[in-house]
Image 1: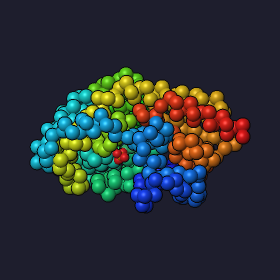
Image 2: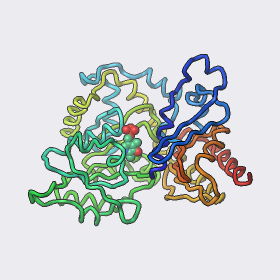
Image 3: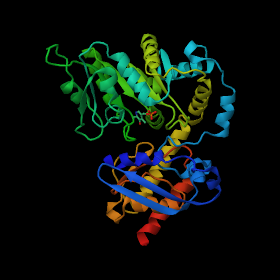
Image 4: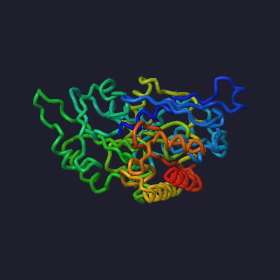
Length: 400
Ligand SMILES: *Cc1c(COP(=O)(O)O)cnc(C)c1O
C-alpha cells in the first residue's frame, strides 16, 4: 500500500523543461522518488521533458493513473460551445446542465460541480454533520480517511472510526453494525455518517452488501455517503445503473477527471436542500467559481463519450495486461474487476524501479516504488498495442 504513495511525487516534476528552447533537444531525465523509508534516484536514457509530459501520444502508454488523460480536440470543440455565465451568480447554463444530468443519472434531486473529488467528499461530510460531537465510520483504506489530508477532522470536527475489513476487500453490514456508535452516553461521539467507497483499489463493492448496509444506516438514522469517484467503473462493469446504486445513498461523489477523462472536476449529488447547503460550504471552502461552463462542457462531453462502453473496454484491457503479467510469473495482488492492476514482481527477481526504468526507455510510464509492488492504472486512451509492448518488455527483462 505505502509503496505507491511515494510515486505520487512523480507528478510533481515540472510539466515543461526550465527553458523552452531545451525542449528541442533531448535532455537528461531524472526521477527522484521520496518515501518514508527510502530515497532513490533513477536516471534513464535521454528524454525530452516537453515531449514526455505534454505530448498526447505518450498518454497511450501512461499507466500511472487514470487522471493523466489528454484533453482531446473533440473535447476542446465541445468547450467552445459552452455557455459563459457566472456560476456564482447561478447564471451558467452549461454548468447547470451538467449538474442536472448527473443528478438524473444517479436518481438524485440535485448536483453540485466542484473542483475535485476531495472537495466533493469534504463538502458532503461537512454538510451531513451538524450536531457535534459526532463520528464517521469508514474503511481504513478509504480515500477519505487516508488521502484527504485529515479534512474530516479539520473541516467537520469529526472522530473517524476507521475499520480494517476482515475480508480484506470491503466493509460488511455486520462490521458497520458492530462498530456504529448509537448511544447518547456522554462519553461517546455518536456515528452520524457512514462512508463507503466504490470502487476501492479498482475492486467493486458487492451490490447486495450495499443494500444491507443502507438498510442498517436508515434503521439507525445514520446518513450514508458514497465516495464513488470511480462509481462509473463499477456501474459500467456490472451493468448496474448509477440510479440503482444511487437509491441506497444520501449523497454520492463522482469524479470527472479520472476514468471519465475530463480535465478537471467532480460532482456531488443529493437532495436539493443538501446540495443548496453544500453550495454554501463550497463558497466557504474557496471553491465557488465563475465561468465554469468551459469545464462543465468538457465533463459533459467526457461522460457521454466514455460511459459506459469505453470504460468497459478499458477493463477488458486491464484483464489482458494482468493475464499477460501473470503468465510471466508476476503476482497479481487484487482482483482485476475494473481498471487497476496491483502487481508484485518479487517472484521474477525484479524491482519496480528496474521495471520502470526499462519501460521508460520504451516510452511507457508506470509509478515507481522502492520495493517490488506497484499499481498500474488504465484509462481510455491506453491502447492494446501499448499493453502488448509492455508485456514484450517484461519478457525481455526476464531473459536478460
Ligand atoms: C482520486 C480519488 C479522490 C479524490 O479525487 P481528486 O479529484 O483527485 O481530489 C477521492 N476518492 C477516491 C476514491 C479517489 O480515487
